[in-house]
Length: 121
Image 1 (cartoon, rainbow, N blue to C red):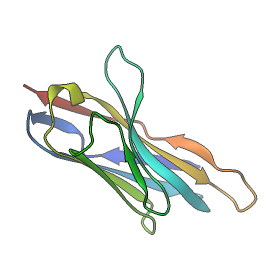
Image 2 (image 1 turned 45 degrees about the vertical axis):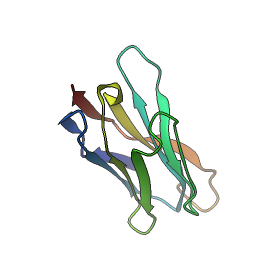
Image 3 (image 1 turned 90 degrees about the vertical axis):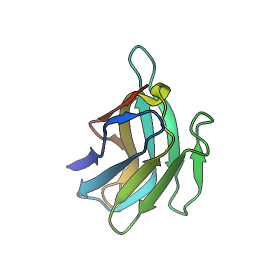
Image 4 (image 1 turned 180 degrees about the vertical axis):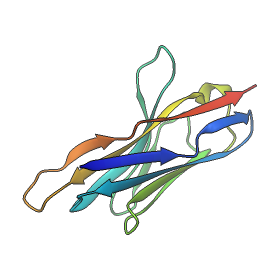
């Protein structure tokens, strides 16, 4: 069993900041790339940011310069620091990780349950 558990969502005013955290637990041999996605009401889930095992990062254009993704491989965590939030950032944010459970397994993607971020104007 593998779980990804997010925390840190909530309600914030426009211009404010939030920090999301995601922790992986369970039977895990290795974790590859990790990332954050979001889904706003009536919209498709979209990529927000990703980070590789080597620390290479990529961001959606809409969050560049405002969001920062980081990871602690030893702790099996990935964080998303979100600054200068605006109402368009309102969504459910999901943690994603490519996890290899056993040495002979292939990696496959796992998802957290999601955490709500609401930005008021």
